[in-house]
Image (cartoon, chains in turn blue, orange):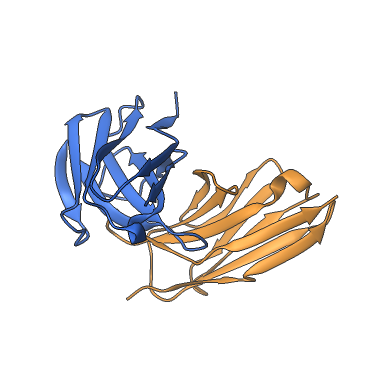
Length: 114
Length: 108
């Protein structure tokens, strides 16, 4: 199984809502990533988890809150988002954080904030 | 600071044509990744290169470490190859530095 799954595929939320994005992989990877991608732009790294611990936070606003409940799951909790947060949110995983490793990406969650 | 430049930005080809997408980076790296993204979709990793050349089906990726340059070639292009192709460099850390992507359209 070389798949990273993400749910939901699409999400529309108001600025006062609280929602969560979910990501799952069963490849035994120990590093998991959240990226944000705006239209016609490359992905921007948001967070990296390594062995279930947050290792990188790219100065992401606190309205985005990541969580790694176990080595297979990665969540991104959303609260009080702004319309400019509308984007494609991609999850990825790799065997380990250190060294040169191939990253496997999920299909993404298309988020619209009204 | 490593910067990754891709060319061309947009590319239109007829089915069957040979396609080349170029990628240059500014500092020494550990690996170069080629990624494919279909419209509205997730990203698929095509190649990870540290040196030389890799081939997978109709896709070939090459890297010249001295020149700090990589190319992605598609032979016998097909409309289903239409996508955005992104190169990304990786130094010693886990972070990828992405190019802006090349949008490829292959017409039947």
